[in-house]
Image (cartoon, rainbow, N blue to C red; front, side, top):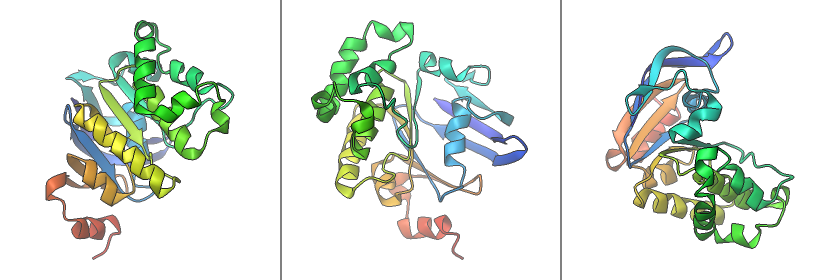
Length: 234
């Protein structure tokens, strides 16, 4: 579904990604793990057109994404749930969710998708009239995920959903990820929690210093060997 080949990207004169190649299979959960500074978030931003690509290509269903503007990605079926939640703090929970269906082509089904979001995240329905800025970190993450699903994306990019959350909330989020996976959604999960990420994934990529060091089916991943690569242990 998404094919990335020989990709280089970065910020101004600083290159972050070095000849990255990977494939995102349809209907599967692909996890990208690695330490801070590995280039995971930069990779998602490059897919979304937020970071300029200086070499290589990104294909979505065989078509190049290079000319697609960031604000047009939802119309092409790609949704980013960003690191740090990034909700609209002075808007209500429901207004935040409706922003996920802002594009004209998604508005007709916004009511249906709003109810689906509430069914997936019942706590959001309880707080639908509450300002997003008053939510807990876990609730804000649920809101960011619900908003990202409002456009019925073909591919969901999720960046560090467990960051800074209590273990019980992380458990809830990974149960939801498992449910989305079981529904046949195509998901790209960037995550530092290796045990949880590998446990829910179909395929695992390990990045370090802007390069892919490992590509393997999740069922074949040895966590001890993975951690040796993760921490650059000899």
